[in-house]
Length: 356
Image (cartoon, rainbow, N blue to C red; front, top):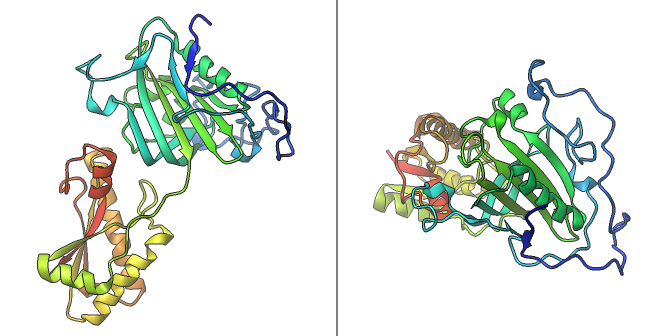
């Protein structure tokens, strides 16, 4: 290749030891399982060309299973592990002042990203790094093959290489409102790769949006990890005091990403609201749903309404009468702070109790 990848990590260790995994340290990409009937929702129209899925890819007709990947014994350097192609640099306001803020480099302690394996989207939560690399001369083929080469040298695998056409056919949307599918998803190109170490799962996506930025490419790296819950549940007494003083109080209830289903860890918050209403039988509340500005206003409005109704439903399930509750959604209309960082967006994604 005419350009060499600048690596931010050390070269893999010599194979002088044995992994505790039963597979050899330099195991090759596993053979794909026997094809199964394709999912009709993700099958392109007969007249459209099929996406390119490498024969030695870990993705198959049933999709990719991370547990099938070998365990790497290579040594990784500092986060985010992979640097730019030679001659490329991260987009900044200094080297291209006119580009939008959402295209600048992001390094988020905890976020989510949906990786495509040729069959389905695989949601991954953890530390996320996304960057737009700008430069000239390199084709996207060279760009993604550099990353594939390095990841495979560490014992990683190719998950998918092809276009976004299957996602376009299934009308898939990406709630984070990033670089994917902003113009012609079915013509966008991507390479998705996976590396499993004894204590980490690392996902990498090289991406080229079509038809703009012919020599600009995106790189996304996610190191999978569990959420560290730092929000404390306000007891019923504190909720009552806030309602009496301010007339409203914000709750940070965890929902499935871009969904209205509450996660199990939100149960203690709901329990305190039930205590509040049980101890104050004359109290009536409006439950308001609020979102950040990721996605379209119409989508966020619908999402906020659904989440408010979900909280009302959870309260009713524990014996609170519907005549004491009202659900309203405001979408992204009432942010508490500017949506200028991931921390600020998290603050705006809330459910508020408003005294009626």
